[in-house]
Length: 143
Image (tube, rainbow, N blue to C red; front, side, top):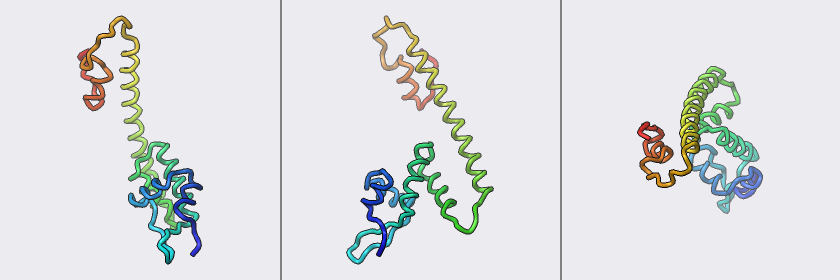
């Protein structure tokens, strides 16, 4: 049986072996055939899939979104343009939401850094950073 071992896939894709196993458990990689001695033998395509997954993660896609992208990518008979357009539109909305959250948090961090350096006895309850994080990202404006 031809193919690559999990170690070879990990090395070629630049990830840890446990990453490959994790992607398998999450359903991102198909279960490979096994040799008579029980070793999993992956196709070369798996290296491309792992690289695809890692790059998509770097761009901020969730594993569920990546699973959806992979299922579209793996379809040989057609490419669902409308499905991709809808997916992209949804992702744009999520990105814009994240940008708003990051901009709000940046403003809080800027406010904290502009405070007087003489006040070094702030409690955690009066710290804007701690307030924002403990309130689920919502600054209550009390400080």
